[in-house]
Amino acid sequence: MAIERTLTIIKPDAVAGKLTGRIVERLERENFRIIAAKLVHLTQSQAEGFYAVHRERPFFSSLTKYMTEGPVLVMVLEAEDAIRRLRTVMGATDPAQAAEGTIRKQYGRSIERNVVHGSDAPETARFEIGYFFNALEIA
View (cartoon, rainbow, N blue to C red):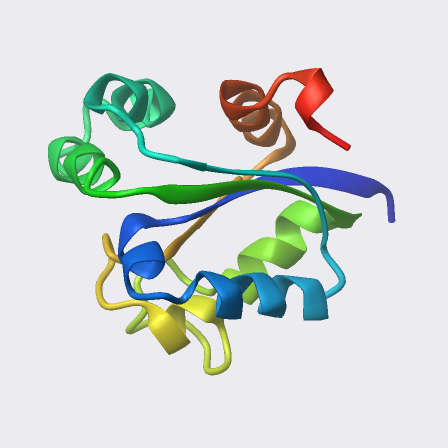
């Protein structure tokens, strides 16, 4: 398997709920290497730009409002098969449907307030990483 990069976001409810350290620890235990990280408070415009792919979906407005409620921790992770592996560790988008032991099952409260985001494909990861980080910010 090839080494990949992916983006993850620890969402506002997890940061506010002081779950950031637990989630980062879990990612490190799963052998993801953090090669960039920053705490940001998204504006409405930034959230809308990041989630533009969902603009026509009925949840777009509530999702972008939620993502601006407070700071988020944005990270670039690197590992073998990182995209698929991160999605497995995160669990299903709906915490009620997520497998036992996944981050979303353990900490998520709803399909929207599911504590963590992860890129779903290599092209998505490239866009998302570039949205938050420039080359000089990635170690």
